[in-house]
Length: 253
Image (tube, rainbow, N blue to C red; front, side, top):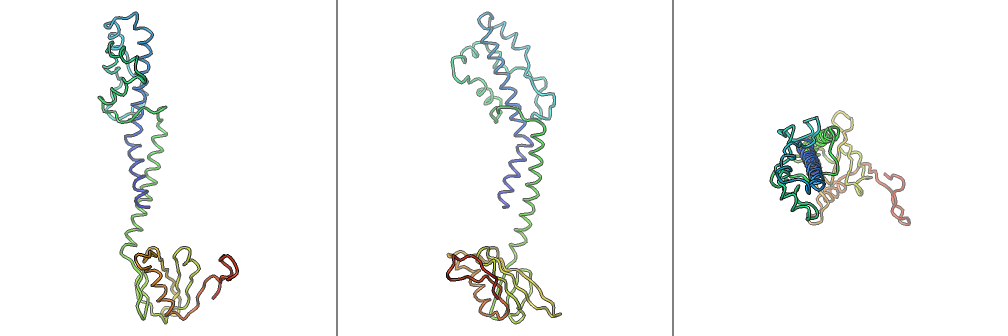
């Protein structure tokens, strides 16, 4: 969970901070290339290289008015790239499918993002930040849980059990053991009598504080086996009818 939310946080941060803006720049510049090539096809037969260069030098890339939708430092207005001023280069590219000029420009200009099908609005960029903060909170939460559980363990010896929450609970103080979730979720709940006569409840999480891996000797199952051997109180578990499919029946004590 920590890794997953951490990766998502980084991905949405990158998109909100740079990614969508770079894609927007790629989109609008690609449209300028499409416009230039379209105009060139329509007029180059009647225009000299000098006339085309003069025409291209007066053109600008149609960018959004909101500069926050583009990478920081993007010039506004932005003139057509020098590549589009080159009459011979554009003419030579017309016979190549797909037209390679924009990809050549992206490589030279260091624009890493390919042009998307449409530009991204400010709302779309804002959504990336919202999801980033949600994932960041979840990442911090997962990290806190991990740090809290890393130093905790459940232990047992011949006289007592030592819960993850701390302390020593002699077997004689145990009054109730709930095993209804042990076989499905690796969870068991134990109640013990305190010195004041009240009951204290603690949880045994077999997946977190032991595990069921065969190659490790199933430490959680070994712990539960020792606990059952030394437990004399009430056991809550599902009664299984030998004749049915193993579905839970009524609780048994």
